[in-house]
Image (cartoon, rainbow, N blue to C red; front, side):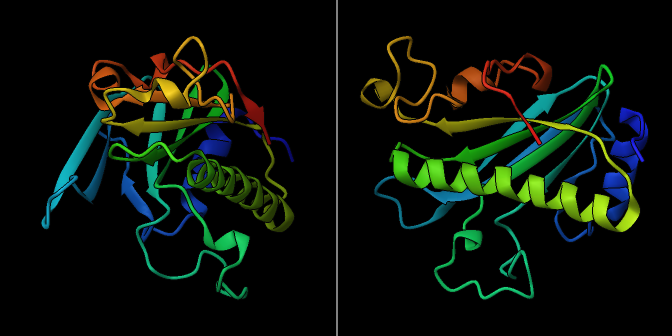
Length: 195
């Protein structure tokens, strides 16, 4: 049964385990927090990104829990063992959007970034299919992919315009300083995949 966007969003949130939810969006801002090692550091530091939004939104940290995403599948070196850092679901202007984020420090190694974000797309498609199969609830999800870095010279990895990864033009690059000034609704990525 095809639901309107707001109802589908509410159903989707209700079906997901609270163990993966890192922000319910109650404040009108989604906060994404990641601990990482700075280059040359032996202690982890915390990076926090706050993205105000319109409509409704919630955030999932896919790589947080150390459990397998699919408990019935062997995770050892399998493609489904990869995962992006965060998925933010948003209901805005009668559409369901999923923003996939991969946080990096300076490295822009395209092969790992592409695989991690591709796995996020597959996870969203799998979630949609499972929900539809068991409940009959259905609605298209519009997916956009982003990689965030503190790399001051990313040009070698980006397209001529300096916006998208050269090896995968569906992945939009932002420096952490750039994205800190934006809202979820103003993130720029022309490449939208609907699942």
